[in-house]
Length: 216
Length: 215
Image 1 (spheres, chains in turn cyan, yellow):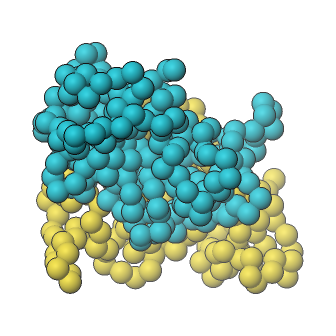
Image 2 (cartoon, rainbow over the protein chains, first blue to last red; image 1 turned 180 degrees about the horizontal axis):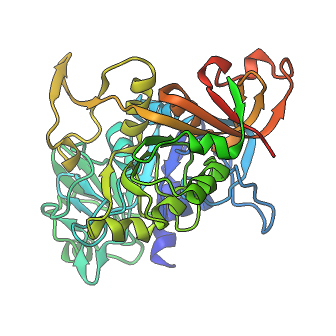
């Protein structure tokens, strides 16, 4: 299975009916493809839509119905639209149950850096800082390493997105939870041992006596 | 409210003005007004908007034509030209978290001096700003934003200036319609007064100064 698929499928298990969920660009977007059967969630696009559906068939897109990346989407029956002030009120105001975001680095206390690389990539934070500061639960979807270097680090060297720690990081190797300033290895990917995860991770991990295998 | 031609609507904007412009990645941006700004070569503009779109679309056209002095936006990632001009020092870019940006605009339009938010605390966004404690929690003080003009794209307008919007083209538009000192509206459709149900009016007519005629 592709790393992105493992990550997206595992995060989809975090969904339950009735949740309001915001998915970021990249791997997070793939989570929508693996919503468990019988589970009905509301997907928010922060440009002003709840009830975001899959992309339209070629040629069937509408210029005023788009996702937060400006790409055409559909709206499911029961969808609603609103302005950007309400959209971020939903995000900051404790109404958003879950946000799934990409990451450049997460440190062992759960702090996330995902919005800039000084002097290299300055895209702007968009909604990322509000999402991490405001959502009830924050899950990071990212590959474990980039060019052989662990993205789960002792301390972020890139500017952080928020002082609020994320709840969970899901990579193609592991599920890592954060609490009380500590990183805890919760699950390992099929065929991956806890020792392999530790070897691939710069951050210090707490290893419980029994680390279960990810269910995909 | 006054109905004006496209040419008149832009002729009233002096060089050096500050403009709030609706749209999210160019969806809900008044493209006709943008095109006319290009044609009349308005210069040294400050733009307050969600993003600088992409080259050749919406606000991206103004960036490409080098008509801007400063942008206050949340995202420039899809417009390499913005980043290039920023790195070269030709364009001042103030990056603001999206939720903070829309609330600063809303505060401007709603008569508030600013807002308190936890977004941006402990990040470069905090630099040079005050923090305050309320009920034991720390917040960043973010000042209200104002602009000389708001350039709004509506879906439906009547001849009094009542407005409604389409789907995700709503985004910043109703909020900037409260915050611009002069509000100029382009719309996909114009209908007679009385056609729009009061419940469906999102921006009430007295907020609109100029409605750009369709042809």
